[in-house]
Length: 172
Image 1 (tube, rainbow, N blue to C red):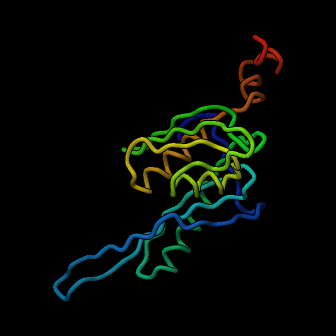
Image 2: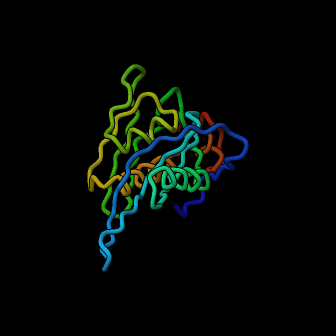
């Protein structure tokens, strides 16, 4: 996420909805027995082009979810959404997780698996074709999806970056 076109967003001025992607129960074995702990992956978004993810760890499930939501609000990015879909095809990769996100016509819906679906719906994308190509680990799939969405650029941004008129981007 070190690219220059990723736009960070402040969470204070927008209304965010959260979605729980996954909860893991982990055990630490000690002399006195097992100590259980929970980790939760949470995705937040305003369903209008802003999305973020977070990881929370705690002894209780509710605390882990709350920590995940707080972490997600610190990692918000702006995503271009054009007519309810993404502007172009994009690959995203994080560790072993690879994803492919493609635009779709109106009425298609969100054709994506569990972790990807949560990210895409939180971003406000209504019609999209998406496929998880690598690891099915929800951590890696969520991070790869957010990377793919954050790397997308709409036509206006491309025209501004190239220093040309918007018509020149489409008509050569």
